[in-house]
Picture (cartoon, rainbow, N blue to C red):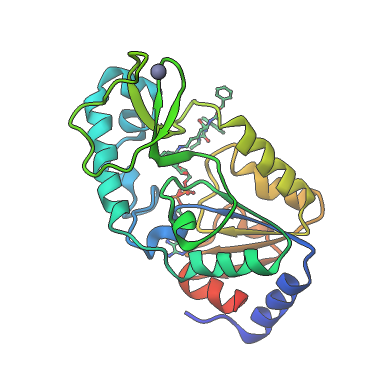
Amino acid sequence: MSIQPSKTEEVREELRAASSIAVLTGAGISEESGIPVFRGSDGLWKQYRAEDLATPEAFARDPRLVWEWYDWRRSRIAAARPNPAHEALVLLENHCPGFALITQNVDGLHDLAGSRHVIKLHGDIWTLRCQHCGTVKSDRRVPLPEIPPRCACGGLLRPGVVWFGEALPPAAWQAAVQAAESCALFLVVGTSAVVYPAAELPMLAKHRGAKLIEINFEPTALTPLADYSFVGKAGEMLPQLVS
Ligand code: BJW
Ligand code: ZN
């Protein structure tokens, strides 16, 4: 799908002129890299129940089941490469001094694409965290060991991600709020914007006077608030806006 030329040019100009830009990405930006999204007809939550896999209660009840699901997710992600949407955001970072990239994704594809400062709201699938002492370590094994290993302190290691009912990492959340409150332009890419508190960020930015631009495959609850809304694939739309 291509964008109306006049609208494209207007947004390209907005991006060029903005003194500061904050971007919030969601699972949709990695969809064209072959990583399944959560919601929608092909989404992970159609096949699996979030309560069984993405809550601390689920891990306490059946750590092996949750562990296996993350092992499967890791193998999908390990085979994936960044797509033109991830790459366009690297370009944007290189051309805008006041740039902040906030992601809900745990896949690490922004890092792999070359984005330098990624604010990760929901953690990182390539880390493990000790349930007892909180130590976080990088772990890129695929496949994972069959059962969750133990930390040096004896505590059980778990995926270093944020599950429902858990607080977001405070430093990441503070950095995201600061970026949303101070940016001139807020760009939202590939998120259904239904998971809080991440979904507050575009509204926070808008209330502080930022221009709101959305790119999504379909309209969302944010669309009526957006100054510009592009309906289409991030990997096609973003490069057109940023090139
Ligand atoms: C494309 C595309 C293409 C596709 N191009 N676009 C009632 C009201 C409000 C809040 C709550 C409530 N009840 C409970 C809550 C809180 C809860 C919440 O928000 N629930 C709602 C779902 C109702 N939130 C939490 O629990 C959070 N914590 C919290 O609130 O803590 C409070 C607290 C404070 C102090 C102490 C203790 C607690 C935590 C949320 C954690 C979310 N975790 C997950 C899993 C992460 C780990 C993992 O990956 O395994 O995060 S769930 C999942 O959803 C994942 C995602 O990051 C997140 C958001 O999903 P996203 O990215 O938006 O993906 P989709 O699939 O929803 O959308 C994809 C979009 O892309 C679609 O719109 C497509 O159209 C589009 N698209 N292809 C462009 N090619
Ligand atoms: Zn430990």
